[in-house]
Amino acid sequence: MLKRFVVVTSFVFLVFNSLAVLAQLPDFTELVEETSPAVVKINTVQKARSGKISQISPGQIPDIFRDLLQQRERSQQRPVMAMGSGFVISDDGYILTNHHVVDGADEIVVRFSDRREFNAEVVGKDRRSDLALLKIDAEDLPTLKLAEPDELKVGEWVLAIGSPFGLDYSASVGIVSAIGRSIPTEKGENYVPFIQTDVAINPGNSGGPLFNLDGEVVGINSQIYSRSGGSIGLSFAIPTSVALGVIEQLKNNGEVQRGWLGVVIQDVDKDLARSLDLDKPQGALINAVEPDSPADKGGIKPGDVIVRFDRQAIVDSGDLPHVVGMLRPGKKAQVDFYRQGKLNKMTIEIGRLDGDDSAVASNADGSDRLGLVVADLGDRERSSLGVRGGVVIDQVSPDSSAAESGLNRGDVILQLGYSRIDDTDEYDQVVRQLPVDVPVLIRFYRQGRAISRTIILRQ
Image (cartoon, rainbow, N blue to C red; front, side):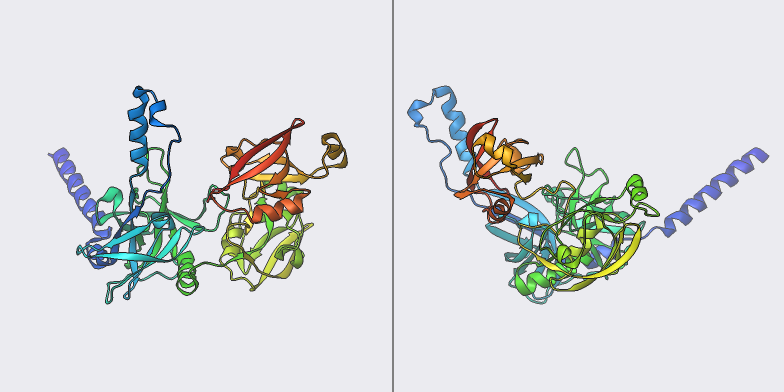
């Protein structure tokens, strides 16, 4: 009898304990009902580009291959359709989404939960932050509020609404896993301190809102990490601290101007901290300073370790591009840095990052737009090759334009496009002016043999 009483009592305790835990969990139904009307599904169409796939006459192609070639040509002439998500930020028709959702689109259609559809125009887009601002011809639209920056904490509940795999207005929940994640792009650029969550985000969620429990947008869903293509609990959102500044500039100028410092940086590990007389590993170590850059003019030198910039702590090197990139060109920022073990302060005037041809603060490899690190030729090397100039390749970044063209370490570049390359200054000037997605002649020496190829700078 006593044993049965203990079992029943334990069961009742567990039931009440479970109910108490459930009572503490948030109820998202009201939040979803209030915010869904301002979330939109975005459908895009990229028209087929004209161009002949094959220059071979059909009569010259064996029958067995002719049908395959014709099927390939027909498939490449079809329009490309894609989808994503977005949300209304003002009742007169401004909508925020991801850059990659609308990039290259010829037609953009915005669809609301009440089935209304509008054609949208791109006000402006910014590849580096992966944000785009759209405008539709409508008034009195439901809107969402962007949360105040820097109020989000790890462990908070968050909710996402979007159209994963085309399933309209799906909601998923989770918690904030981390804040300030640095995820460099394929070009080594790193301007967004991402919010990491375990919210189920899938293709189609891109550009949709990430809410806190107050129904405010704390982030714009942008990326997932997945080996299968589906959610595995690692999703990343652009924080409102980034979005607010981008929205203002896109609305006013149609483009985003970013701050530029002109340094090559890397993390400080334990051994480097000891060699630099630092108390602990911290900050961004300056490996190189670009001549005539804001850092050079301000007095920053290789070997300095920046620990605060514009009153914001620089814990590791990835923090520096986040801070500098958000500053307006021309602003004067205070820099706290260590030099030879002593803490110093200085003021630097922020420069302007030009289009896609500069970097706020390069990664440790210091590669350029083509994915190369080059150096001037010495007199002996010039004499042995019988040339008056040229630059030698010291490093080729994987998956870069240079790697695609088959360039190797040790190759000597003599010509880019119609420009002769005599030294690194001329090379840098030509590379900065290279067009995107256009084949350009590159002539170089390899083991004493002159080679000509084309190289394409990718967007």
